[in-house]
Length: 258
Image (tube, rainbow, N blue to C red; front, side):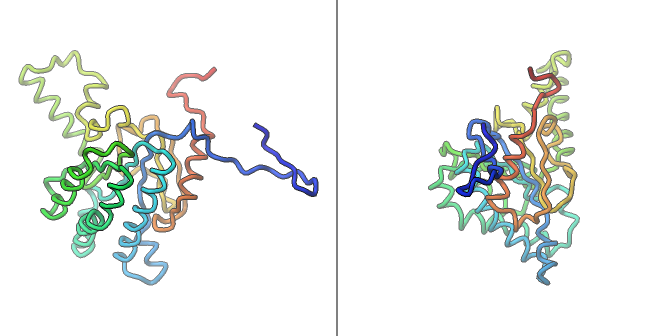
């Protein structure tokens, strides 16, 4: 493809690269970071940043769906986030309730299917019930999967998977010699996603460059893109820019491309 064009005046200028619809990442995962710092810069309480961040979930969900992304996984609340002040945790636990109550008609209209993974039994009753209702209400939708990681931790997920596999082996239901990568994957919280379980692209906002106990198994061959934008400032254009960067990578999965 020609990367240059001519203006009417005859000046050669670089074309703006555009997304290749045939090379979109099927599964995009996002660590939505920077809500508190976004609020602090505006002399607002941290919860104001979380509220704006949740509003942005709606915007980016629609943008991803319209682009043709098949699965969007959002790191909403980690197993480590319980260490935050009780007032902030309480507010964060209310956000999914408000989000699903308000946004559900749009999700239904957009044909989005909601999944929620994590230790849901440890969530407050109202939060857990809102998550379960969202999954039930969208179970028949066939469009993009909106997968929330809620009370989720990658190490915790691997411990639980190991316990399940060990219990099956101890009960004589599984020969330890047959345990392989597919065995482990089938016991992870992303197993319901099937072939979409492993993200093609991970995006982290706020300028931090770490994965923070997120999808430790599944990110083995994901492309990582970090942006300085705080999550409330992450726009559909920023999403497209991250995907464009992904499309410029050479994914070899440990091998060589001819």
